[in-house]
Image 1 (cartoon, rainbow, N blue to C red):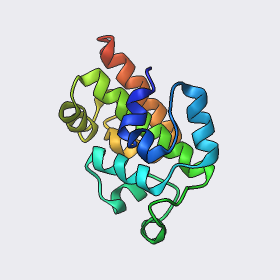
Image 2: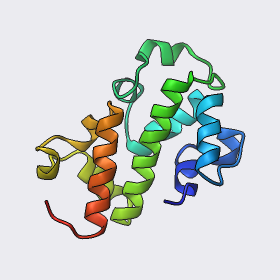
Image 3: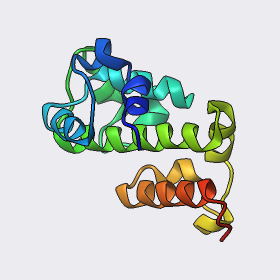
Length: 143
């Protein structure tokens, strides 16, 4: 997967304050910390409020609201943010447009045990399941 989609969804070089060229750059960003500004860009892309995005992350809504836009999250939160951004970028790529992906993200999926894909994003394992399902959709594999 091309990581440029992840960078774009998080606000690009201007918001991330670094260039994302490959997955090693994502590792470094995860270690250094993703900013609140980048998290808000991700929430906006997904059409989620701060409360809704906080429900997917190991950090509370009030904590997020208290932080300045430049605040960088700890690595565990940052990596989770990056994984959700990867799902978003991959979903947009597979469905060809953001609106179709967002519609799918919010509907129960038989392939995921009738779970709603967005709700699975609160777990790293769930996000991996969603990424796997996007791969199957891309290749026309119906489960």
